[in-house]
Image (cartoon, rainbow, N blue to C red):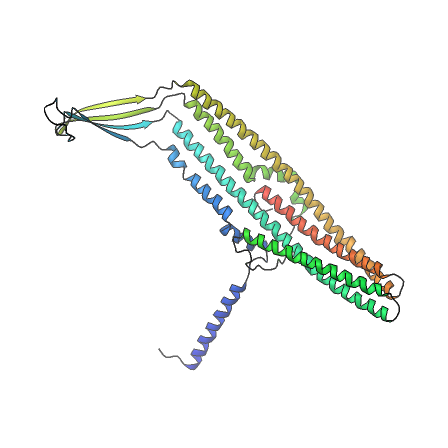
Length: 424
């Protein structure tokens, strides 16, 4: 097949477009939003993967737990010398007789069902622990993302203020050159800039730590690149944060409570099984007897264990009662802790919301007006440079309070969702 010049140009253009699209796709880095980070962690986090595999292993124990034991075959060669008439022989056709005993152990009624139910409950508990691990991992990712956002915004704010101080230094230098201000004003501006550069170093170091921590949660190399956090998740409306409603959801959906519920029911079944061990288990058998080369006799056999070791069984029963009490206590302790954490984080989220509103609606506008007034007063010689620096610091403090409250609200929201075991 021959290509014309126009066809070749179209082919090259298509190849170039595909290459550019692939390069652009490869250049997209995770980290811009929480949803992308959670998708990566769900597939790659080793802690969660290990708990999922553990839950799968527990699920595979259900069928064997309720199955009958393997049958047993016993072979007995009777009178291998035929009353001394021949040398010992191991051939079934040359001995006096051969007994083949096929035996099957049968537990007491209900024991197999109890063992299967215990295995099912243990599998449910393992699934609950896996979900609890994912809730913990996702909460750490959300909190780390919020900390990264706070540090990025704080660094951006620090650079803006540093640029502002640099402009104030120039104003102070101009006033000093004109004999309207002291040299100390220029020096103060320079000292302030040096202090803020030190803060930038600390912020960059902390961002590196958060970067490494996030990559660990994503099962990526510590220094693997991540995008800048772009935006925070919206905080739910106060109507969705009613404690009574969320308490019911936590009792019904919290993974740790679900795991403890399964442990409690498993302990109850284990106690029933311990009491059923008072009754014997049976072994049934079929016994064909071979003489020479033919089977001429059939026997049946029944065997049972005699539960005479009552002291051992009573100890096992007391152990099962104690383990049941332990499961009840742990479940109650978990419920108390979960509800206490829920109440604490709801209060913290409300405080963060009010703090952000106060900084946005009141503190920041007031600080900006104070700075503008101080700047005009300094230029007119009515206030000193220290007052101007204090006004600048108030603006920075107000903005830091604003973004810190936003990050705190995100961390509290992440903890509430961890407690609920689902997104709000």
